[in-house]
Image (tube, rainbow, N blue to C red; front, top):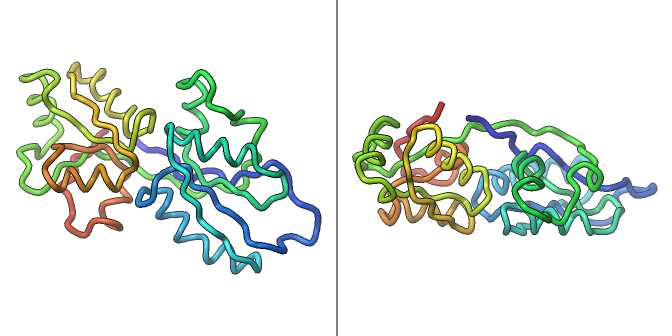
Length: 216
């Protein structure tokens, strides 16, 4: 399954000319070390150079992306606060949360589609789970005992695990973390056997590559 990556640089209205005349905040509503954070820090220098100013990346994680997204929606409408987000925060959260604190249509203006990345189920080196079939068989043998880590409650990695439970007829326990990096650290350390995450993260952030179990 694929997820749109950082599909929006968002801001309510453009500031009057001249623009820009001060640094721009680029808010990432996910924790440091995740896909959005990686992409934001890769593109910020070139984007700032093109605009003739500095781009400051600010991580404001929490509530599946709601906290950072709310902060941009409530920021002054002057073009100096931008949002780099993913499709789940904009498309899923308004249905998942009674009051996410923002209107994904009226509070933002989409500026640029950056790209897409697949999500994968991963296990650490030496794991007995070498294929998705191994995972499903183990989960069916002992319902509720096999667990998977995600970047947090309500995140797309959480929901993909829930979708796998439903589609495969299994019951894996969800272990939410405050971001991708701590989740993967615990998977590598053996505290949690599996994790759902963007396929972009292991090659860039963890050179001790995990065995990847692709999910269709």
